[in-house]
Image (tube, rainbow, N blue to C red):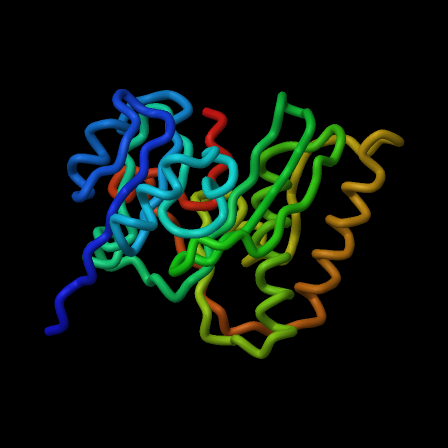
Length: 218
């Protein structure tokens, strides 16, 4: 079995910012730290250079970089060891209020690269966002001919709605959220007119930490 390549971790915001040679040492600085910013690099020199730069030049732009509060943080190598399909995509949604300003996004698990980010949309709900995020990912994968790429979502409701091909929200339509509901209508029509083979999988937050597409706002 091939040995894993070593990684070095930069912590810009944590208990003690710096460069760390092991995931355990990095996790001690970020686990439970509100607003932690960190990222993995393939060499010490790259990590030390990045540490001297602003976090926003690197954080959230691929690799192991996330902002957390209290949910356990799990490194990508550990996720693979736990049986997570690292060839999959992950999606998530966030809403300021309920209803409120809604956003959703998707990331590639293997690279951490943000694949899409949509919103904000006025007067939406998280469940609507979770539904739209899954359908958006399905449509992109269908267009690219990637029928075997799985999609992870941490929303049982969103997954259920997609399987039923219907966004079963009870949110009333209004002039404010008319644009959002146009997206919902389009998503439902796409589901009705397309057959997809992509697996839609439940992300187990309790065991794996927050889904990598998480907005870090809890």
